[in-house]
Length: 422
Image (cartoon, rainbow, N blue to C red; front, top):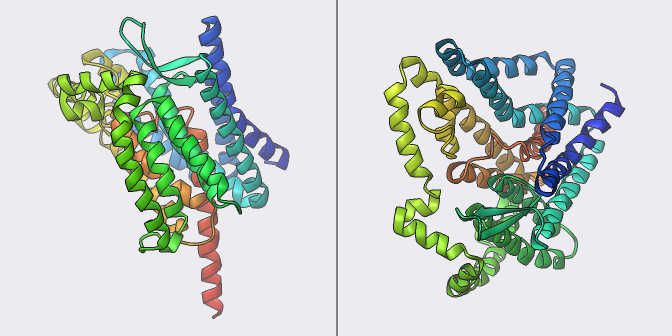
């Protein structure tokens, strides 16, 4: 692959959210879905898989082996039901959940060859993507696009997400991109930028109005400075004292003012309804825990030994209960069985461990906020899903962790060389 193709792929990565926005604009404004986003990301994946095939046969073998293992359950479901369209739908979801890994492996190979330019272009991708997210939030404030929630009669809308269609996917983007911008502001020469971005982060989380975005907005402004202490991350420092003291006061103030704010936005009535009908777990999981129990009962009434081990795909699950309960570890088991759960745990564990190890060293701008983002996204996968299956999140998430991996592995290789000559 020559340098021009390298530049072209990063251009496509940067345009990913803009295409999602354009797709949402056509759906919201004109009522037509041109499938621009799906076509764009399919083309992006084809280019990246081709590039991987040129660079590393081992990576391609890994990808196709994972694909085949994850498809065992859907293949058995195809044999039993002859549902070809259902199998194709399951296949598309296998591609979706493998997308972060594909982007990650691509980023690793490409950064090895053009590290300096890759980091420069990577920053541009993230800054532009953050700008696209802010554009959508601004559009939502002005009344354009979609709401995060609508009542059954459609009369009351809660939360904004601009022209992005999926609310929980926007929560994942919010976590990733605001982690980035807060870390960039904290590491700038003037801390005033962080003091400006911190309240903007909290406010944007409230405006999006998903539980994940609101909680993440509060956590990010506290966690980003802490992880940027790197090897002092777990030591008691003046920074922690200076952060947690006002944070405690702020938390008490939020509790005091939370009810009228939530009542004004319409979220309070939703929370009260969930608490009265479904309890604390109903609030945390938005009723998904009940879906999970009902789906689990239906699954084991229909599942044999093969299905219990390898799942039945989305198409098979949809026939006995519902296609998804939106608790990602549970969904991955129903869809792809034990291999699905192993894949989810493995990719999150690898990304979290790698970013943690790199964050301890003063070698990477990317690692500290990648650590925070990876942990929060793992939490998001439990309470709202839409992390591994998020087409909007996957390109940026894979790229970010690819940046971290290459920086850390280069540092470790350099240390080994120095130690060998010592």
